[in-house]
Length: 140
Ligand SMILES: [Zn+2]
Ligand SMILES: [Zn+2]
Image 1 (cartoon, rainbow, N blue to C red):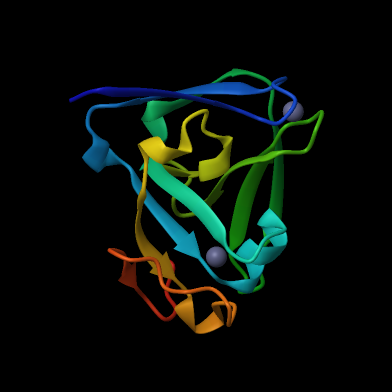
Image 2: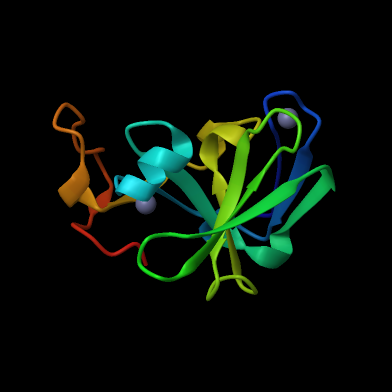
């Protein structure tokens, strides 16, 4: 069943639309790695992986490219006004996927998580998410 989702940054200067042909096209996951903690300013990162063609900005965005510490470039896109973090993608995924920050969706509960990555760096007080697969390291 086709699924249309909308999202925005905090100040709503930036809005986007996602058109999925089915719920199976999205994979939401938590990541406990150090880069995600920094980028999200939280105890973990949570993004939804979607095909690049399903995602489009209606207005606004700003791109930051940085070395993620392992030598590979990771692009992160933000609202140019309020700085809300909207999505990320590595050099390799650039033409195929976007990882949308779950909290930027207008309805984050539309895409519940399927897995957890870098569980080796999970904060001690953070329990495993029931019903998810758990991987110790690898993001992909
Ligand atoms: Zn904004
Ligand atoms: Zn991560």
